[in-house]
Every structure is written in C-alpha cells, then in structure tokens.
Amino acid sequence: MATKIISLEDVKKSYFIKSEEFSILKGINFDIEKGEFVSLMGPSGSGKSTLLNIIGALDKPTSGKYFIQEKLVSTLVSDQLADIRNRYIGFIFQNFNLIPTLSALDNVALPSFYAGKLVYERAKELLNMVGLSGRFNNRPNELSGGQRQRVAIARALINDPEFILADEPTGNLDSKTGREIIDLISSLKNKHGKTILMVTHDQNLSKITDRVIYLKDGRITNKKSL
Image (cartoon, rainbow, N blue to C red; front, side, top):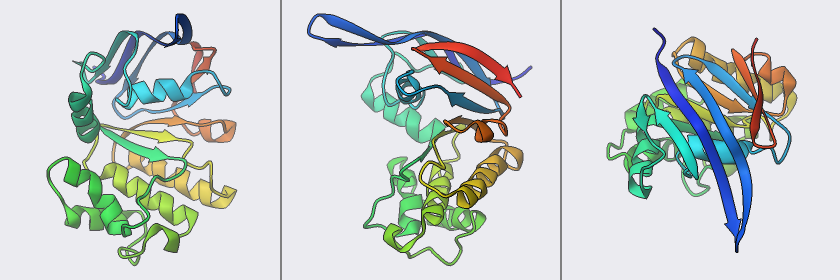
C-alpha cells in the first residue's frame, strides 16, 4: 500500500479586507504519495502561491485539513509549523534565497542549525553531490545562477526532508542551465527516492513529472498522469 506524504481535504483559503471576503482556494483535495514527482500548474492568480505556502507550512488554511504523513498540520501554531518545516520539508526557490554574506557551505548547513544539529560534514557531502566540490567557500555573488541553484538544492536536502517543494526552480536560468537543474532535481526522485512537488509554468518541464495538477481560479481543474 502506497504511503501518503501529503494529503489535502477540502482546503480553503480566504483573506478578509474590512468586511469583504476574498476567496483564493475553494476546496482543494489531493494526495501525493511517497516517491512521486508532481508538477503544479496554473495561470497567474490561480492560487498556486497560496497553496504552496500552505503545503510548505508557511501559512494555514481558513478551513479544511492538511496532513503530512497522516499528521494534521493545518491546526498547528507558529512554533509547531517551524518544526514541521525543519523536519519534513526542503525548499527550492526561483530566486535561490541564499544569504549573500554566507559561503556556500554555510548556506547549506544553516537549516541544520535551526533544527538543532549543525552538520558541516553532511553539507560538504551534499555540495559534492550537486557538483560543487570546489566551491565550499564561495559566496553567492561569486557563483553563477546555476551554481546558486545547486547550492539551494543541497540546502533543501540538509535535514533529509520527507518531500521537496520546488517553486519555479528554473525561472531565472537559461535553458541549458535549467535543463541541468531539472535533471538534478529528477535525480533526487530517481536515485534518492525523494517526493517532489514542483510549481512550473513550463509545459516541457511538467512532462518529466509523474503527474500534473492543474489549478484555475482556486480550484483543481484536472489531475493528469503522464
């Protein structure tokens, strides 16, 4: 029996300005199983960022339930959500989100510090794995865009998370470098068994994933296996 890593049940999200309600997510239901590589697609304004924030334990739904490995996350408070992020989730961002004053090694190791177990040896192993063995001491401004994203991928793995959230991971890269980064992200599933949810606007990138979830106007319009 397949293990559910992510499960959303009738998840809704609204924002209130004065007395007016703005509904962003309108009842989201889906599961992602262990080892799946799933892409999330939809036009601007469809609710992708809001949904990603909820799945990443950065925000909570207005109603509905969100589970990570059958653990109810949607009712947790801020400190508990921070613990969930450290223990279960690795993030890869379009803009890399590296700290400019830190070396590549320190950037990768930083989440392990917040998790209470600073592990430089593992950070070195991960930088080696992503092809940056000679770049431990370089700061982000001394690295190319592709190299920065490799640092970000290594950082996402430092706490051995249950799943990876990749938000437009090739959005700031040229096509050749973007392909290299996608190959690297794919290897996290194929070689390391990681579960991945990737937000992308690129139909070509979505074709390499196991399944595509389409979001439009805050609703899922299609779930398609490739």
